[in-house]
Amino acid sequence: MDKKQLEIELQKAPPHPAPKYELEQYLTPAELASQILWIAFLKGDIEGKIVIDLGCGTGIFCKGVVLLGGDCICVDIDRDALNVARNFVGKDAEYIQAEVNSFNLTRKIDTVIENPPFGVVNRGIDLKFLLRAMEVANSVYSIHKSNEKTRELIMNMVKEYGYSVELISLNYRLKYYYRWHRKRIYEFPVDLYYLKKMSNS
Image (cartoon, rainbow, N blue to C red):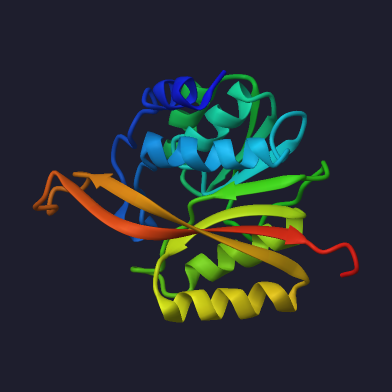
């Protein structure tokens, strides 16, 4: 499977039937998801690996992981989202309904791929997801809003936890999702943080 085929498959990802704004639920665009998954695939962090998506929504990342030869665990607090993910991804993934810090793992995780809430509603929730990701895996791919304050905060935090950081700038094309949205598409820059646990940490 090449990157274009991956994107075509991910375009089939269903939206949440009744997204909850308080959880900042949005469907990650297939173009963006395929970019991130392909980066992780080329770095050797998907094929033959155990990957977890924290805040998986309807399962777009886990679907891609399975298509690229990895095992995936979908974690989300929302039962409705998990039910959609289960129908979309199928039996090839594991599903956990839990808050990001309130579940235990029985397997060693290799990689986290996540698009956490940006903290628009619940301030600091993005960092909570990132901290949890670093607790469970040596390789982390996490999307965050692009601004200098957030960059400085995350860069300092991850280095304290013994991770190297690669910052990749990407474009987020968010389609109309909530009834109060006035545009068909909102387009804005985001930062993908690729974190790797340093061997001497």
